[in-house]
Image 1 (tube, rainbow, N blue to C red):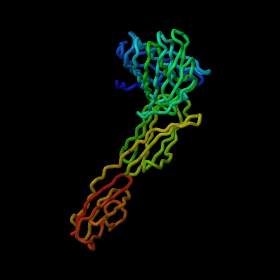
Image 2: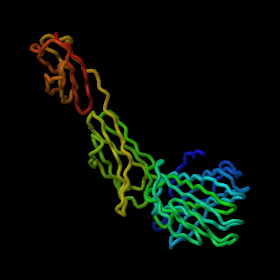
Image 3: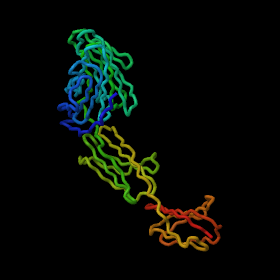
Image 4: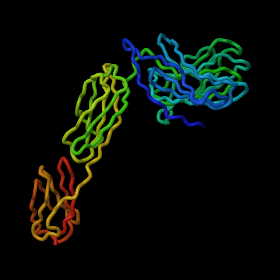
Amino acid sequence: MRCLLTALVLSLIIVNQGFAQCATGGAVWLNGQNDGQFRDTGVLGGYVFAEAVTSGTMASGRPNYTQGSSVWKGLTYASLQVWRAYSSPASNTTYFKLSQALDSNIFHVRVDNIRGDLFNWESQNVRGYLNGVEVPADFKDPVNGATASGNTISGGSTTNGTTQSSMRVFFHSPVDSIVVRQASWSDWIIAELQLQCNVVLPGLLNRWSAARNGNQVDLHWSILTETNIRNYVVQHSTDGLNFKDFAVLPNTASKHYSLTHNHIDAGAQYYRLLINFHSGSQQTSTVKLVRALPPQLIRMFPNPAHNKMLLHLPPTETVVKIWDGLGQLVFSGQGKGQVSIDVSSWSKGIYMVRAENKNQIMLGRLVVQ
């Protein structure tokens, strides 16, 4: 089996009155037209790149890759079509890879049989995947003899007939790849990836980053298209589970946004971005982890200590805790600048010291003699 190339992402182009651009432009050949091997890339909806990789036995000059549009149940679809033909009983496999996972409310597959040259025999197995996990599918609207059993479509139009048969495949959740395995005897067959043009595709998060800058976090994101986006909500968490709204930014149509979270704690921080649409729907970004500040070495004098020990703390209020060698807390307090601690009554041994404020964590080892 041939591996898919990493697909590219292109900006979505929006046309008037809330309709997504469906012009697909010309197909781009990568390796030329070959017998038995085929790889090509086309564009769905003006921004979704779809790559097709086909291998197997087929007639000379096939498959072919074209782009067009069609109307089904009053809705207009842009399509990327892979045509196949066979000169003998054989099978092949076509892999479709999308640059953006799409849901069946705007995307589905149609498998067609234009006509049978000799024997009207074919079998087409269609499966969709998201991140390598198979997604269940419904097979709908059989036309002119097409039937479905499980994931397999069979039957078709009459031998030497020109009437097109077809079957549509709708996936239960978004898919980013489709596999069509096909066996036939000299039939012409088309597999189409169809994208609905009568809807505005959701905004695409192009970049989303969160990076610590001392005691603050710099947040950045960019959007490929902002049509129908109401606002952006940045959420913050200290445990990665419980998020609270930190900031709400309106859609300014700039496509690029920056935000700073000041005076954060020294520990790990978590951020996610919510995109709210005017329709009431919402998209959620991946969670970004900003790691805790690395601990610094705390200054203590004298060390070893006998009676008193002097801690050198930052000029901001800092919490200090000290544990003995058994893990028992022997001191807890807070202060800033130089803090003196009486250790004259402490048992001889090694003690662990931790000082923490919103900006930093400091650790040290104290020896009492």
